[in-house]
Length: 379
Ligand code: NDP
Ligand code: GDR
Image 1 (cartoon, helix red, strand yellow):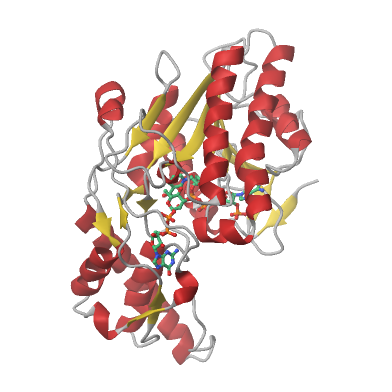
Image 2 (cartoon, rainbow, N blue to C red; image 1 turned 60 degrees about the horizontal axis):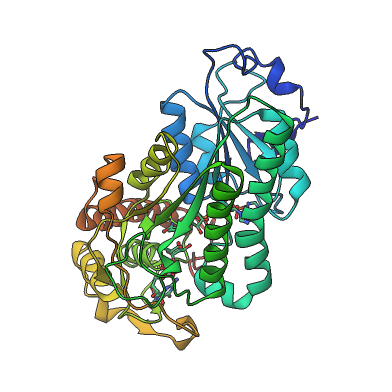
């Protein structure tokens, strides 16, 4: 039976269901739709990658974890109920990166051509609070998924599966910029150390077993779908709410750190491109432009005709036990070999986020004025 999840139905769990779907022909008979399996599909990148792969004609299967709240908001616009239509090309299944058996079972049942491992406890500051869990999901979770792919291939001769690992510029940590594929890692958080482990598991499965595995070393990428407790979105949410009078103060930590911020929609294309190459490899993906948090504030508030200094209050709570001061990527390899380049500039990114969050705040204001939500409720 199926379980409903916020309007998005989660798959039946029946391993024969994929074979029974008219869109899926056994892999020996081609051509057929290519099948992608995406972990972390409910996150920022998962939603953009799913849109991208659906446009490319893929059937996209996402693994989602059980939550007491609905967690499929970023996917609702892509959802078609499989009971009503043969056009349902995105399907969701329960699994967890901490549960090896669930990963192997879905790979056996769905027979993906490409696996994108985007799932993570992805908040750097939170990883200091839950280090053990972060390592379990981010490092051991990647290992579990790689092992599921390896053991699946060992028992399915003739199959091929390409694997993408969501690596991070946080792995460079305190190593000075510009950072490229040959820059040594010096992680500065449990999150970053776990990503370094996942990176090397991915390299090892390529070298030891000849698997087609790629590490994308992606620098920060943002969007109107960014989680609300990452600094960019926290700022643009506040700008929107300040504009409509729902908020006046914004509490932040360190404003001097520099990040190489790009647009998430541009970055998911690089993930896909890596898996279309003849040989698996690792690539840095970055805009090659860096800005401080203070510069982000300047542009975001300035665009809305506001002065950030009138609103921002420094709160020690948001400082981290160890900080990453300066990230600026050298993505020349990805540009040369993948033909990838970012399309959205820093200014355009900030403006896009402020525009969307202003619209969101206006809708919130309507609900506040009608008495449906508490005006003091923070996002
Ligand atoms: P998000 O935090 O938005 O999404 C993380 C996803 O992982 C969510 O779908 C979440 O599910 C899922 N997840 C968390 N824990 C588990 C678990 N135990 N089992 C299964 N799924 C789980 O991250 P982003 O989309 O921003 O990032 C995608 C990936 O790229 C992450 O691995 C991140 O670390 C990495 N990365 C991100 C960068 C960025 O700037 N955005 C830069 C470099 C790397 P749920 O919705 O239920 O919480
Ligand atoms: P980061 O993103 O740690 O780079 O990791 P985040 O937006 O959390 O922090 C960026 C910088 O802003 C400073 N900062 C604050 N950060 C947050 N979250 N909240 C605040 O109030 C605040 N005030 C200042 C931080 O100290 C930091 O220097 C993101 C995640 O998506 C990771 O998963 C990913 O791997 C990396 O980007 C690349």
